[in-house]
Image (cartoon, rainbow, N blue to C red):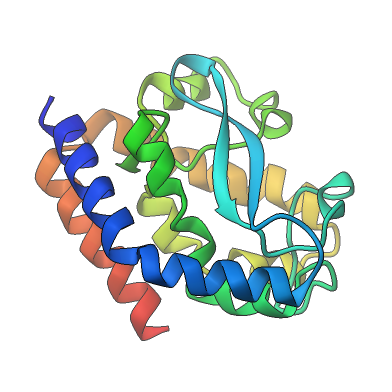
Amino acid sequence: MMKRLFDIIASSFGLIILSPLFLVLAIWIKLDSKGPVFYRQVRVGKDNKDFRIFKFRSMRVGSDKGSLVTVGGRDPRVTRSGYFIRKFKLDEFPQLINVLIGDMSLVGPRPEVRHYVDYWTPEQMHVLDVRPGITDPASVKFRNENELLGQAEDPEKYYIGVVMQEKIKLYLEYVNNHSFWGDVKLIFQTFKVIITE
């Protein structure tokens, strides 16, 4: 109850405070490339239910028809504005809308696409016992995931066999041990990582 109340208050406050920034980013995205301001992708949420996530569009329209992983610091599918908003995780801010309506929480395992969830074992599916979040321990540890995948010979295979497996371990640890104050601490850790790197 406390976690959900905190999510509602914090997401509402965040959306109000960040609305001027949202407007500036929306204009930049529209001027930079053709397509909508928001990118709405289907992800898997709590209790294995699909929902559409809100993100600022950082890639060219139709780029998600190929590989689902983004690799390296200069993926040609990423727009000029996209490089900036991805670097500072600004593309994730619209997910405050998902938090407000109850699809997500501020803190929780990052929601995956169904394609990758289909690889999960029955034990790993316990990740879906809680609402997915904007940030979590895996987001902090794998903050440079794109660069890491860019160094792999087969990024898709490396993601599924190595990165995803490590992330799921951290997700399950969170599911089994999360607390309200632990969430607050993780939010500050996330901001620190974004600002200092």
